[in-house]
Image (cartoon, rainbow, N blue to C red; front, side, top):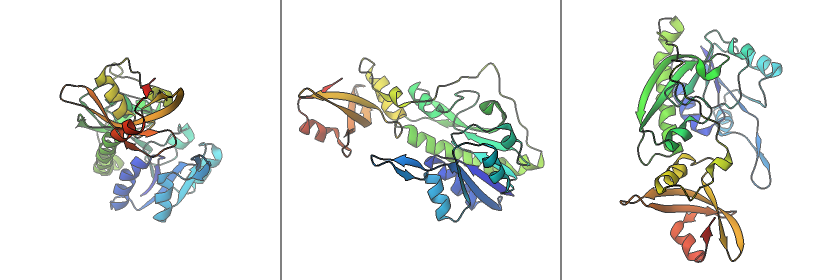
Length: 287
């Protein structure tokens, strides 16, 4: 069996590595987004998925869009099945219909809850206590496809987007490999998503991560966890009539549920402890 792995997110490396270790898959090729400009000098940088694939000697295809040219290149790889994990581009019907066993998706939520591109962000922002991973067979409506498997996962008070996403992708990878034999033989029972339980979450943008200091300490702390490591919670601060951006990388609530900031990063500087920030900026004000 040949599997096409579609992803542009470094956290999905967990999934790819588990697939490569499995004896259920004969060969794997990778599809990811094209190199993007990075940093102040705008140097083109490949995705972490591409870097890993090239290091492992896997065929790696990079596309800006899944047009007819891209589909023809993918077709040449003769995929029996395609697995998508945070790829970032919508699949056209031509591509969905290409593999013998269709296109499956690992979605980090208990669908039909939290459909959309940013389920983990919103799970934390909404202070939910549990979530999960779903394996679905995608159709033209993407997140509305039939559910092949699901597993619930607890959310801990310390979880941020990175730690929770990592666990959910690990669970999703194990689920995919567990159900793959019964799925390809047609013996796996699937279920349709309930149309009465769906929720849709908007895609997160950088401006969503700006801290609103009128919110409660608990809400601000969730914003900081939900947006790490992307796009990272931020605020503006002023000192000596100058304004700068400050990223809030880590914080926690003390025993009295008061917000305590642990780690920050001033614009164009390296990350530092908040204690060091205070020593260097004794007269600042959050905006």
